[in-house]
Structures are given as C-alpha cells and as structure tokens.
Image: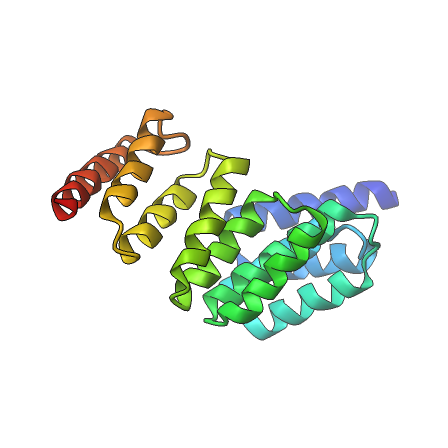
Length: 202
C-alpha cells in the first residue's frame, strides 16, 4: 500500500471511530496521524477532543500547548483552533483566568474572532465580571450573529447584571433574526424566557 493510501485509510478509520465513539481506536489512529504529520493541527485538535472524552484533560492540554508552541506562526487558522480548544478545555476544568489567556492570544491576531470573544465572555461570566462578559458577548454577536449559545449567554449576563429588559431584548433580537441555528424547542424556550424577563423588568 502506498504512503498516501495508507494515510487515507488511517484517516478514514480515525473518523469512523470518532463517529462511533470508539475512543481507544480513535486515539490510536489519531496518534498515528499526528506522528506522521504533526503540522496538520486539525488532527491534533481532534486527538485532544478524544482525550477529553476519556477524561484525560491533563494529557489533552499538554498536547495542545506543545503543538501550539511547535507550530508555524504562518498557520493562523490551525493555531487559532488549538487555542480555542485550549480555552474551552480550561473553562471545562474551571480555570477561567487561564481560559481567558488562551482566548486573548487568538484575539491578538484576530481581534474580531467571534468564538474567542464568546469564550472570553464565558470566562468573565464564570468569575462574575458581568460588564466585561456583556461586552465580550456583544462583540462576538457583532462579528457572527449566528450562534444561539452566544445570544443565550449574552442574555444570561444581562439578567445577572439586573438588566432584565435588556436580557429580554437580546433574546427578542435573536428571534427576530430568525433564531439562526436553533431548533423550534429552542425558540419556544426563548419566548418563555422573554415573557419571564419582561415580568421581572416591571
């Protein structure tokens, strides 16, 4: 079998294993891919996600950090994806300050990157820095108004700030935008929340 055919076979096995949630097999195949092509950072990120699924957060973090440090600064997209994964992992393991640092590294290169702004907002929300969270979510929405979770968290930050009317307005604006990316159930839940928030605003 040629090197290219072998590579494609391993890649196919890795993706199938991930889809089937066969984490040991996915890990084995992804480690082989990363060893063969450490510069392909999408495989590194996927391997980190597989390690996280197995509750191996320390290994996942070390993998992301090591490959980010070793990667070419010209691979802006690949490095961004590693840092976003790192920020998300640190939020999941309750380290918002470290998550914020990873998100800010993305924003140093791409100041309007919506996902980094969203994760930064989550880090601020976790520590109760509500004005900063509101601003980060607002900037994320301004860059990319299509992610329901950003709108929800924006509304939550406004509600926690005591601005119930603005929290309701945020969800209302999202619905008027067509509720991009959301299910019918999500939209109904948003309408219920709007009604609740309007009552609290009185």
